[in-house]
Amino acid sequence: MSVTAVVGAQWGDEGKGRVVDWLAQRADMVIRFQGGDNAGHTVINDHGTFKLHMVPSGVFNPDTACVVGTGCVVNPDNLLVELAEVEAAGVSTANLWISNRAHLVMPYHPRLDGLQERALSAGRRIGTTKRGIGPAYTDKAARRGIRVGDLLRPAWLRERLERALGHANDLLARYGEEPDDLAALLATCARWAEAIGPRIVDTHPLVESAVRGGKHVLLEGQLGVMRDLDWGIYPYVTSSNPTAAYAPAGAGIPATAITDVIGVVKAYSTSVGGGPFTCELHDEVGQRLRDVGNEYGATTGRPRRCGWFDGVAIRYAAWLNGFTGLAVTKLDVLDDFESIQICTGYLLDGETIAHVPDTFDQERCTPVYETWPGWRTPTVEARRWDDLPKLARAFLHRISELAGVPIRFVSVGAERAQLVVLDPLT
Ligand code: GDP
Ligand code: IMO
Ligand code: MG
Image 1: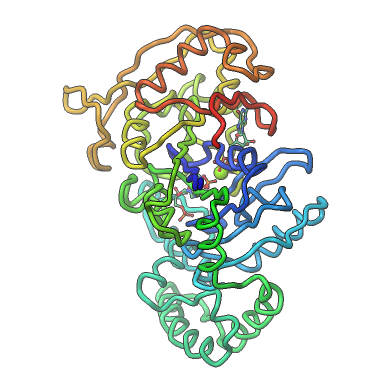
Image 2: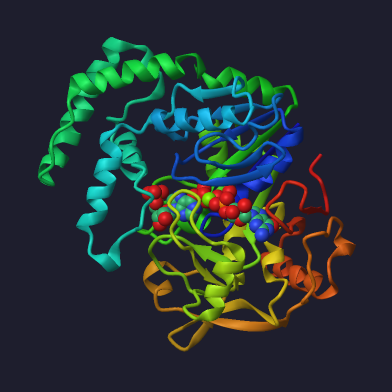
């Protein structure tokens, strides 16, 4: 039996899609366990280049069942666009299933997301993707959410929607906005039921039989631990838990069934959106990382904030997630740097600390760096550990040491094959 969670070890965009795409070549099932189409998971393989938002990154393997899990929030219109894009590239989506217990992102959720962001002062904005994720999870927690399975029960749907819409329209009115219309929303829901109805299933028997049957199951996380609702830089977080601890809950498997947790981590740091980011570089080095790494958001196109590798954050991530292995991505981006820095501590009130403090203190931290010589050699062709330059290996050893976790994969390019595999998962 192998159930592997693949999660973001930083602030998101670590290359989870790329890693899941590779692992999924021999997976029987890939389950997205949280988040919605705020995700932008880039996959480059023989089928083309894709920015997946909601579709699990295992979709390119026709034998892999792809499940949009119970812990997700689903915007059917955006999902349908994405399915069409994938299908246009000749990829079958016939094996994609949506949990009837997942929640819907309703048309008023993105509206409210935008309005709520606008109401915050400029320096306090979360910088959300405006996909309605926060408002949809808010409704879920407040027990007025509409679930995907409700689409298939018109009378029940109407009752649920009357309640949810009453609240949404109260909020819209507070912003001086036009209300959403019940009849129009019911018509939209009827269209969704028609379009995605055959994919809506109770994922419990499907997932249970895969896990019990010893199948290879991947749990694909969205975003990263530093934007986790509980452990991230609150309030500059997403409204779900991207940490591995939520993977079994969102996917619907026992916590004890997880056999591996792979933390995907860039060889440097990036973050998109608001909140503290201790290693952020505002200088030409940060710009160089952005240029070489092409650090622009896969969902919003926003420039990503860039900085050196944060060894304090990775230790925190390793503890909270229980990583059994790391997948270090974008090593090649550092190929030309004369010297490279690694943050090994945070300076707070004149003291060096080795742990991630809460947001308020994190805002006041400055990084303590150690400096490493660059390897100044291309790594994009490396496929084995020994192919990597000695200095690159030393740098990777240091990352592993700071995390206290062995490195299992090193990605040296965005394409599927550009991977050094130290220990393939069995
Ligand atoms: P995700 O959200 O974690 O799946 O990551 P994103 O797709 O948002 O961002 C990762 C970006 O880095 C994408 O543009 C990938 O194509 C790219 N990428 C992934 N791995 C590598 C790598 O090893 N080298 C380079 N140069 N690019 C990579
Ligand atoms: P992937 O899965 C990077 C950030 C937003 C914002 C905060 C909350 O591709 O790594 P939300 O729209 O979730 O309410 O925004 O989280 N954010 C991401 N940053 N990658 C993502 O997804 C993100 N999804 C949300 O910028 O700061
Ligand atoms: Mg992304």
